Image (cartoon, rainbow, N blue to C red; front, side, top):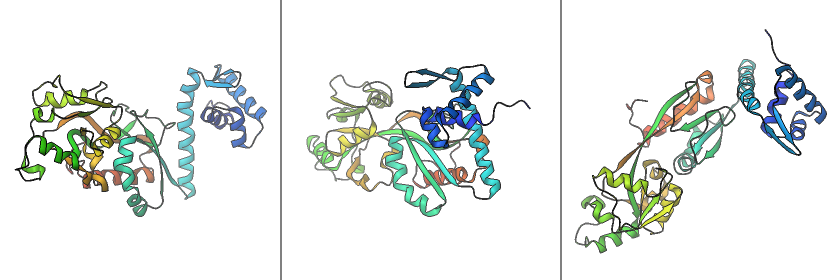
Length: 319
């Protein structure tokens, strides 16, 4: 078996992770010259430059990034397996998750997770975009793109969008549409898309990667075009649109997890209208090679159970 200088590997990982020779030396409790020596040994063995150095700036080369993906994963796996054999495996996990899903659905449930599994230490890595599936980013993920064959996936939610507004704004809608003679319960009336278009529409352009794309899709679902006279108020994030709706700015399109069993869900009224499927499916993803790790399996089962219990996923829904 032909192996590289093994002492150099954790040094390389530390330098790449911290983006600094001096910080890596401090973490490893060695001198900076010792760190430089180990990196030079590794580069000589590989015949490749792993870092570009320009003054105080340090960046990985393309070869360095490729090498880090393999080395970082291998070192983490060695650490996990060793902990298992020593009998004191710690269930510390980093979960990469969309910020809206984390804030509106996951965070309120974390006390229950801690109560049920106190041995599980979970840290959240919030992202505004779909995360890169890599051990460098996190140990497990909530993703809408199950693209990597090296990962396993469990379905949590199939996304749909529906219109909501604040309680006060619902009363305004009723007055302006002349619905005061009808019971105040939203279920007792029905709003047409033409009625909805008479009010400001709060749009989240990141959902369809274009301004107004969410409302265009909603009208298209009804066989209509978004009226040219519509007053669109744009936000970059669904959280912002929902907050604007909370403070009576208009009607927002949101999804189930944004309102799922939150204490403030009663601030909103789901309008008696149709919904539209976005085509996005939310999955819990973990590296298949780490399937035997107790912490990942505990978190996986808990997330799926919570998704079913909160109504995000049907019990018999296929992954």
